[in-house]
Figure: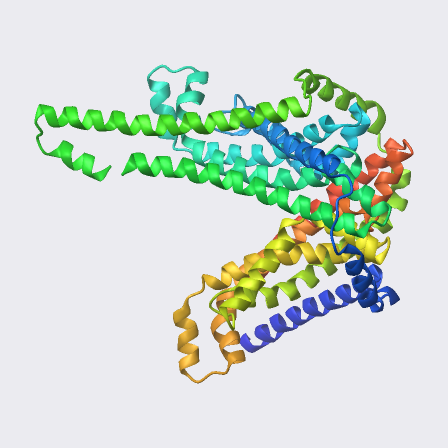
Length: 266
Length: 281
């Protein structure tokens, strides 16, 4: 019996691998990667690179302003995302939610909000409230809520019930339980995920301009539309620097917080 | 902390307790001071961003109200007659994600092995590979898309290559980190039997690398489907292009079909990758 089962399993495996390869080749053909364009790729890329060097920025003040705006949109989007996520997480976590059905409803809402990409949210918010940085902020906030609320709620669900029971035994109100018991327990998870989300939001903020929600993405699209390759590279480098700067700042802040804790513990 | 417990266990004189109390106060002060500095920095950042973007708190209410009004009057009910028009782009999104994933996996294996200190040929190669990976990762896929659309013209080819390139940034780093954490003892044991480089990789490294490899590659597939859905907004193929067309023409009830299909696509792909992960691991 054994060799027969082994053979069957092996065969199933081979069938799966075969199907995958067929699907992959079909996808390759559909995507058009074996297009004549790929054979011209070398000369095209050569052309592109020649046009790109040296990188220039024709309107440095506009580009700098757009980069600053992107950073600000990321900060504001993260701020509101975090604020609303904390409040909603209190309703989503099973152990502190007023009722189990509220918990399920809030979690379902988060799942939907998370599955729709930030850029699509930006498109919708632009239609609903107009152009400018505000739809970008709201789009980032909404998308952040989808992710942060889930992780905050999971963190709250995993905290030691003894802490909450002990607080309740002293006669603490629901608000006091949240402030004294829940928030200190989830603080480290809360901080690390919020910082992680900020890093994601920076990247999104850089591309929000593509759909007209303000920031440096618009400058990039503008340069690419007029085929100004050198400017495309210049703005890409600005975005690269912007993301790097933001990550350095968050890392510095995080290290500082960790250092202080270590210093106090020694 | 443990030293504190020890001191409590043994009887202590009163001034010693006072000293401990003072020490506790000092420690509390250090933390408090640092917290204040951090909160001040965050508050300054928020004020800067708030004034810079002219954000008014009222927009949270009006924005939500407008959004709700927009969803219930314009987006709903979805006009499912547009389903046929979305089907082909939706499938294209899947093809793009898959091909993009395979491209990034192939190149990431190479760059990952070169970037990991223990499998690389030379520290200089490791450093260069890390730098390339970091650069590819720092630039979002959509920006790669914009550049590649300029180079290869509109269509799914540019989007697929953009997914592949940005994927090398994510998977290359992940593979290198997984490789650096493997148990060197097993590799040395295989080497000691006189195995060639390929045999060492196959018998010593691969079994330890497999779990991380499968998990990260499938994670990249999940990411790709999200990215591919929006790459169409810049004309790089996929469902986003049709969606933007509908929104630009104010055909919101058809656009909502597109949004629902993106939602469904993401769920289907995540379900499938979860099943495959379960099977392989």
